[in-house]
Image (cartoon, rainbow, N blue to C red; front, side, top):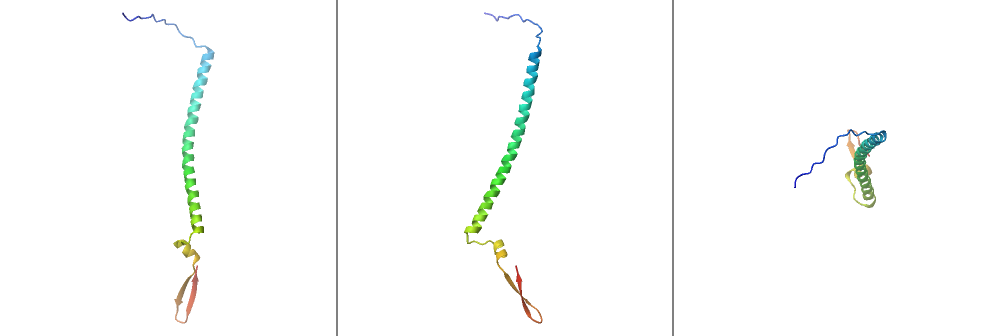
Length: 101
């Protein structure tokens, strides 16, 4: 058995106007969908990063607020803002009491 070769018929294929319009529309749609997919991918990545930052910020604010409200622990910043420091200043004539907030 040998290989059977069919004769190749070379006719010029004429593309009608309907086929050319359909081809142009399909190519246009492919380009538009590709561009929109790329934009959506980049935007969703940015939205994801912003969402993660927002969630972390909200969680930390909640934890700090809850810890300040329901804890007897006082941080150094909180102590400095809530306590009054008394400093004695000695001069030649008299001693004065200064209040520092």
